[in-house]
Image (cartoon, rainbow, N blue to C red; front, side, top):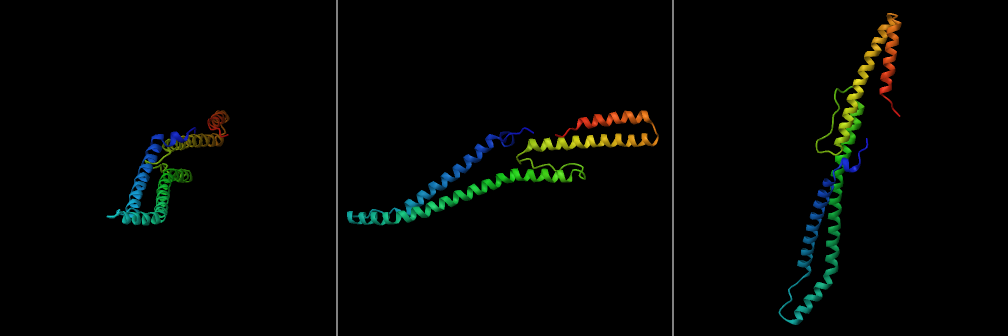
Length: 178
């Protein structure tokens, strides 16, 4: 299997996801800035003295409000990143779990379970299904030749035994595991 990450997860999928996360994070950052301006900003008052006092109060609250909103924004970005990572990992971990489950059940199951249509690793899943089908077909051929060989041995048919041994060697040559 020579699948690269780009074959498994299309680049457009990455860019769409990154764009959505960036857009949501930017919207929350803008909303946070508006909240800071609302809480810190005060009306200037009617006189010059009131305007100076308002400015002084705003400056003293600015650090605390910016700290609180900054921590909120960091927390929000962390939660969004965690959710996106969790979602993406399910799209990879789910298929890997199903592959393992398919391989465990392959001797007894008629057909592998397969993966969801919106999961990543679709190409790998199809290769696995094709490989399992090929191995089952090969196993049936070996089983048939073995049965014929057993019958030929019981009948003491040396010519048939020789032919079937050649067939078994050919079947063995088809499956080569490094």
